[in-house]
Length: 430
Image 1 (cartoon, one colour):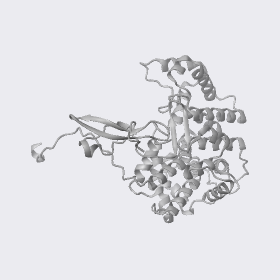
Image 2 (cartoon, helix red, strand yellow):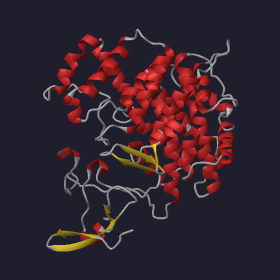
Image 3 (spheres, helix red, strand yellow):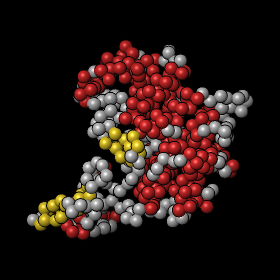
Image 4 (cartoon, rainbow, N blue to C red):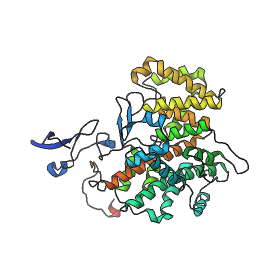
């Protein structure tokens, strides 16, 4: 791994050497795991943005080139040619499945979609106006109380069962959270529908009539799931790995990931983009808000444009753009002011020199928010759908972490800047 390359650090008039490890692609890393032992010092890296916390074979991102690979496969190819279930198998197993493997895997997922009937009572313990993400955190965490036979993380077979259960049951939990929030009865999963179509069925069907799932919308939903399946060591994935490093059961670890994803700086970005469109309101007000976005002294920012990692066009956004227009065309939506604002903002962002120079391209959150709204989901469900899709990535990362012989319990250090040692004083003299 080191290829005999090393980096030299000069500290306090002493020289220290640290191995340099090369990845399959991407930047190399300086191994500072022995830094404290050698120097008595730590590195300071707020947010860990310059720190590789693990070795991984799952996902690679090149932000400068606008590349996203899952196990080496470009995200565009997976979204265009494959299915979400195929992508799940790939992330979990490292290779695309054969026809027989895919059939076995899809059947296993389908037959795990039901929830233990007693879990229905959990939902009724929440306030009617509870945010669906609050319900998700609670119910997913409670899975460990019902499925004791898949919580031993040292048993590969139990890890496999837990992984499949999570991927299968999260859509059911998400749909039930939605139904509970709108006061409708729960709809049970159907084994004759594929993953995405089954989820739409559970969300939008009602017991009093037959509901046909539009195949165009089902395919769009499947593609949205693929595009959100994994994204390397982001905040929620790192949370899952950190929780898992303590030996916590997989259901608790995924619940921790969901809680982290709920943050507006992470999973709430598409909801924020839609809120921005609502703030703009009408097409005639766009020039005013674009001018404000260009004014560095104005705190207003266009949400859904640019990306922290991608300094080029987000490859997921290209696929999401196509999906967005397919959904709008299928639904024949023509008189929605919000969508009119979105389409005009998209046109400006792709042609205005300011946006091009700053690389403020529309990102996946911009298009996914519009698409999900058009499909009938309220904004409170956007992050839930993100969590649903990302579960497979979290599970794959958790499995990799558990199987990594070099993994140890996470224990970041700190730069302490508080009071130095002092003596306790009696309350009468304070």
